[in-house]
Every structure is written in structure tokens, then in C-alpha cells.
Length: 318
Ligand code: NAP
Ligand code: GCO
View 1 (cartoon, helix red, strand yellow):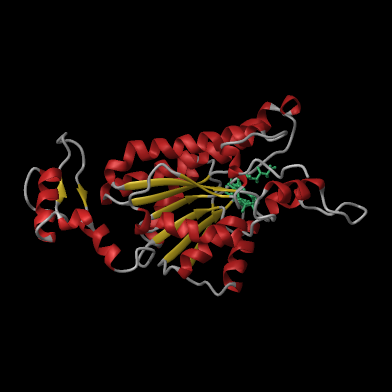
View 2 (cartoon, helix red, strand yellow):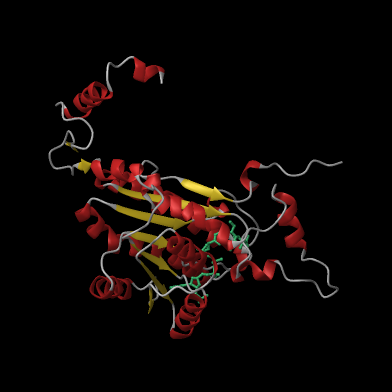
């Protein structure tokens, strides 16, 4: 408020800011040339217009979410639909998984969805899939790199091939899928990429060396895509889920033979200020934020959705 009062009118302030940005007086909504003529120009008009309406709306957008038959990816898809998305595109690794996914969407009453079989570690398959999506659905406005695997094996017992497989799915595949959609996003001067990271992007624990190495790498890939393509108005951010109740973590929640809780289940609840596992639907809101114009100024960030685990030293002894 105080700052505004220093300017005679909003229009005058707009002109002044326009001069800072452009070296001319056209103000907001104009094209801002970069200092290097070979660099792209960034339009500000559309973003400001969206702020006038609903900045969280995904109307008119197509989103491709990898490995979204169930679990976190499927729940992100449901949140995108609630935010008005035009089309959801998802892929899974084989026909059986795809069918299960299509049944889940049908049951949820979602019909603006198209599913494909594609292994995200296969570069040619991904290129073919992207071409097919363009042909059958349209442009890809939003990519969510969600497909992921984990292997819980002590590192000294892990085979090199097992380590490599986790790196391939959790780190190399997000590179393959991002590289496949970035050219069209550069051309349109607009795009959103969301990488599903993990708390293991920050922390280690016994038996998950490959997963932590991959997810730590994914955090840095996120920052690098931001650094390299931010000037094309592409935002690449991560979501770092905490402990989420999905099939991936089911073995950590299994009841013991005597009916008691799995020790890891109790451990996680004690480590989480929220005192519970999170539900995959709780990733929906953060994903909509990072997919929408509401986050146009957020880039290279990992948003941890962990019920507070990373902020917490743990319960103090009584
Ligand atoms: P999930 O239930 O195991 O789902 C992962 C999906 O990815 C599955 O549909 C899986 O297919 C698919 N997939 C695996 N490899 C693939 C490949 N090569 N090509 C295509 N699809 C493939 O996992 P989630 O718990 O929903 O996790 C989703 C993402 O969040 C993962 O990246 C995971 O690491 C991350 N994450 C999960 C948690 C958690 O607590 N659950 C926490 C932090 C981060 P099939 O299983 O059908 O073969
Ligand atoms: C594990 C879990 C984790 C979570 C998640 C944490 O074995 O510790 O599977 O790795 O899935 O990624 O954020």
C-alpha cells in the first residue's frame, strides 16, 4: 500500500516498471526482450489475465501423467479433473496395468482420459508415445513424471542391475519424458513439468540407496530444467511426498502375525507431526498448484508434502 501511494497513478507506476523491464514505456502485458537477442522473449499478458480469473484453473490444458493407473499419479489425475483439465493422458508399463488403470478412471466417473502402454525407460517408445498423443489428443501442456519403483535391499547385497533399474525408472525416465516434451513447450513458450521426488531427495535410510540416489538426482534435474528452460516460460518443480499409503509402501504397513502394527508403521507415525500416513489424495492440491498459472513464478522448487517430517526432530523423551 505504502509503495502504491508513492506513485501518482497505477498507470504511471505501470509505465515506470515497463521502462525498467523493457527500456520503453509499454508497461505490463508487453514483450520483454532479453539482453541477448538469441534468447526467447517472455509474454506476461496471459499470466496476468489468469490472475484476474481463477489462477488454479486447468481448463483447456492436457496433462500427461506417467504411471498413473493408481496410487499418487491416479490421485493427481483426479485433482486435475476437479480443476477443469481438458484431457488426462496416462501410461503404464503393460496391458494389464493399463486395463486396471482404465477401470479405475471409469469407476471414478472420469471419461476425458486416454491410456497407453509405454515403458518410460524406453526412449524410442516414449518418442512414439508423444507422437501418438499429439495425433490422438493434442499438445502436452503439463507433464508429471510420476512412474517410480523402489527396491529395499542393503546396498552391499544389491546387484548392480537392480541398482541400475531403480536409477533408470526414477531418474533416467524423467529425463527421457521431459526431453520429449520440452521442444513443443519451448515453441509455445509455455509448459509445466512436475517431478515426483521423495523425502529421500533429502534424507537417507537403510536399504534404499538406489532410490535415494535417484530421487536426490531428480531434485537436481528439476533445478537444472528450471535453469535451462525457465527463459522459455517453462516451470519445472518437484513434489516430495512423505510416507503415503499406496501399494508401494504397503509392505511397510503390513500387520504382524500377532496382529500388531508393523514396527515401521509405528516409526513413521512417531516421526510425522501429523501422526499418520498421508493419503494419496493429499498430493492433489499441491499438484494442481504446480500445474496451474498460480505457480508461474515458482521454478526449480521441491514442495515437500510430508505432514511435517522434514521439519521435525522427533518426539522428545518423557
Ligand atoms: P506405485 O503405487 O508403485 O505406482 C507407480 C506406478 O508407476 C505404477 O503404476 C507402476 O506400474 C508404474 N511404473 C513403474 N515402472 C514403470 C515404467 N518403467 N514405465 C511405466 N510405468 C511404470 O507408486 P506410488 O506410491 O503411487 O508412487 C508414485 C511416485 O511417487 C513414485 O515416483 C514414487 O517413488 C513416489 N513416491 C511415493 C511415496 C509413497 O510413500 N508412496 C513417497 C514419495 C515418493 P506397475 O506397478 O503397475 O507395474
Ligand atoms: C521407504 C519408502 C520411501 C517412501 C517415500 C518417502 O522404503 O522408505 O518407500 O522411500 O516411499 O519415497 O518420501
